[in-house]
Amino acid sequence: MALNIETFNNLVGGHSFFKAIGHPLAAEKTANFLKKLGEFHTLSFYDPLGFLAPFSEIYPLNNLNTQDIYVQRYEDLGRKIMGISPKLISSLPKDIPALCIMAFDAEKYLGQIKHLVSPDTQIFLLDLIKLPEELLTNSRNYLDPLNFATNFAFFRQENQVSTKLTTVNYWSSYSGKAAHLWLKLIDHQGKTLATWTQDLGAAESSVVLDSREIQKRFSLPDFCGQLFLHVIGAAGHDIIKYALDIENPDDVLSCTHDANAWPADFYAGLPAPRVDEKVLLWVQNSHPCPIPPHMIGLNQMGDSKIQRYPHEIPPFGSVALDVASLLPDLQWPQQIEIQAGKYFVRPRYEIIKGNRKWIAHANVERTDLTSDPELPKLKEHFGKGFMLPAPLLPLSKWRTYVLPTPMSTCQTYLPLKLEVYNPSGELIFENSLGRLRRMDSQSFDILDLLKDEGIEFKEEFGHVNLLYDFEQGEEADGWLHALFRYENKDLTHTAETSFGAHMFNTVATYKNQPQSYRGRPPGLTTKLFLRLGVQCHDTHCHLIYPASLPWHEKSSTELQLYNAQGKKIAKHAIQIPCNGSLYWRYSEIFSEQERQNAGENAYIIIRDLTCRLFGYHGLYDDKGRFSLDHMFGF
Image 1 (cartoon, rainbow, N blue to C red):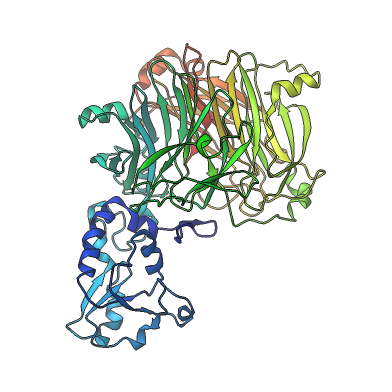
Image 2: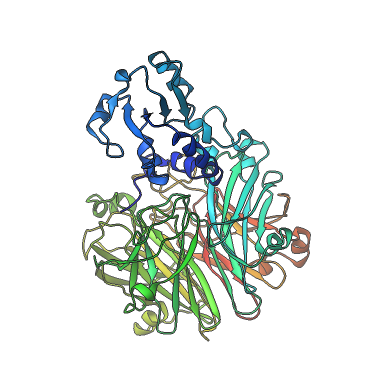
């Protein structure tokens, strides 16, 4: 069974309560809190906000001598809480020995009922497990989402494989005030290896957390687990966005990004291995309670038969689950659905092929969608409508594979088509992929598709679009996803990334599309973060200008180079044709002198006030190793 907690919904966004009680520091305080409650032979709870049930999911309360549960809303009398039928708070007896009020900032709830109980009644408030005030952004409202701008990062330093997290202090840009990071490094057993606080520097300063430096600073053995991040002084966003690079000196060069901070019921987009591959799903417990045996599982997409993981995973612990141990008969391009039960945030998976490894992430499979009958009718107003653009990397070096991935529990069929554009925005190829069933897992090799049609793609690079094909069927919910895999033609290295469709560059809006990451739609401007490689690594970037309807003929894009302190060093203007793309490298655009002036831990902001671009980035070296993932903005 899934944890009965609210983490996120698309109407209100992320919830703070589960973060407040699941924070590692809150977990330490809660152990003492529950010990005190356990000293009473008779204990009552007052649950004015409905927090008792989710609290008991994370911290089982069955060892407490609970007599009665009281609620404030008459409407709540019909539901059981912890198996107990609640009573209205107005019936609270005066002589109860102990009462626990399940609320933060609970003085107002105590003030409302204090005259109803005896002065001898022991009162407990959830305020006893609050974080220290120095960790709060808004001390007047404890459950303000900005107080819980937290996230997890997969973090490893073992066998010369290292991890580097890179982001920017964008919070101080919104507030004009200082911001800090509170960090806890946790090993695979859930044990704390190190805890520290780090100044984030001036607004727009780069933020780099390198596992090699952290291991040296704290004299740590090799480790593989997760890094818990908490921004103090958050503003503008309660989301911690970051790029994550994983590498060793010889074989490994891979990247992914932030984990998405809200545990979900299901994840999808996990590929099965090829014959010569191993796929590891990194299950990293996001809570201070264990994941019991058989509570998480895997199944082939479209097949209801679930294979359960038989072992317990400790609080905040990490397990590399070999998917073949549960589903030995599946092979690429078959796909796997993850039964996560809200126990962990968006997980990473790692593919191992010989000495090579690359890492990517699964995506949230939504449970709140149904097919939208309006989408097939929108062509007149929104042209191509929902589009999922992805790079066609230089054809002389790479092969590009497209694997559509069902990403909603309502998606029984996917009517799809695929387009290929050259850099100038000309449509070179269009092909219907048919009406794919949920269980269908078809990978499309773009080079083979072009070759089969006798199409000579004269340019070095371009991009592909995945769209709905309403001539094949009208089942569509707007949550269209795909995995994109890129392979060196000499098969020495691989990278993959996945994302979902959006509407792009139309001034009219439909259900929050074109999406704006800050403010109301439509999103018609660009601000993308590009972290830069150091030493032997160059940075490559693929920018796409998708448009559901014709928009500005060319973009007015500026590549702004910043040093580690957030000072702008140089800028270069580029133009991308509507429906076109540009593949470029840091070393090609910025001169050697500009790169030297920028120095270590520099970064680029891709800015455009005329249109919304979509981008992919990665590192590249002279050994032919490369990484690739989609970009993020703020």
